[in-house]
Length: 101
Image (tube, rainbow, N blue to C red; front, side, top):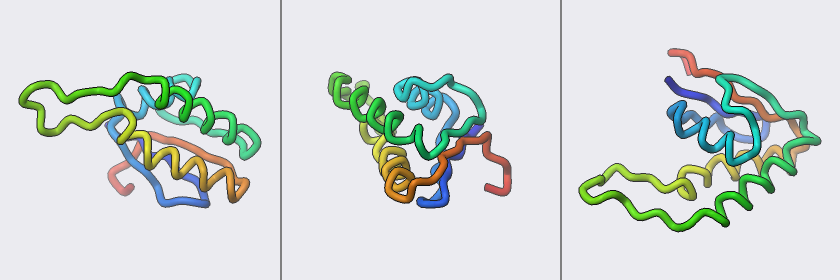
């Protein structure tokens, strides 16, 4: 299952549910299939994600895992989207992706 993050200020970002839930947890948010943040809440959530990513130890790919993506790399587009929402002062949402997304 995919989760799509969106705001009026940035292109939609879709990722696997497990990865999305991990990043939501790092942001201090409950890992749910859908949710939203008011524009006033976005700066604090972005800051929590930045702090959590910066504090995480560097990850090395497991031996033989060519598809490994670190949390820092996976979080980068989401942090860009949150920053764009901060700059545009707009809300931010996430929903379970549909086949049309």
